Image (cartoon, rainbow, N blue to C red; front, side):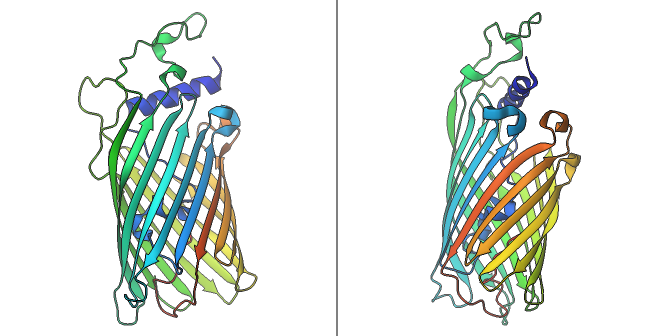
Length: 341
């Protein structure tokens, strides 16, 4: 039994029997509604469309690699009636497929956020966002191999799996809440700090017959932030971080992007991030923005214990964000700037 086959079986078995960690993107900043519902309508424009694609462990799992798609749409409402405040609604959809067994997570959510300006000069704002939706998890047990099926002499799966399967698909409701603080400290320095909580009610999540305590999906807590430093008319420096914890799994990612503005419409970004815990990965990123459209690509260089099998290759990601109807930014408004990194 080769390593690719063994790795895929082990990973899927753990997903079925343990409380798994949620999906995540290396370009977390390019997937606003999967990051924090308080980011709904947090941009300068009429509406925003975002799309993301991630393919992980393709170097040795090949067609059994872990693939994630995500898409979102959000828009501002009542802009002429709220003066400097901002309100909007959004929808989000993602689909995650893991390994040979086709473990699939399909989630659809809708939500709203309100951005309240906190001071008379409109330099600071605080946003509250909520999302609600449904998740469908399903798996093809015919593609899975369990320990009891392996013949010790040949290493081949020659026996029935003997597992007590309850169901191969289930649906549960899901809820998320988030906060986002933004400030425009000077005309060239902006910053933000946010936090969100996913799976508020700890939904039941299991495929096999439950013989003890109920298996529930633990809440995921997330914090993120960043600063945008403008240097002259052409350069920006954008440091940022992400911290998340779910059950016993946690992750810290930090880094920065450098931006060069060719003119008012064209900007090139080049950046690098490091996923800290367990020396997991270095992430290289490049993005190009033109008149409200930003396209990004990133590559994870794997540094973990799997680097021998993966040849240091982790994941490739593509992202697209388009903001329609961008207007002139007010000099000191925190609502107008969109957190990028």
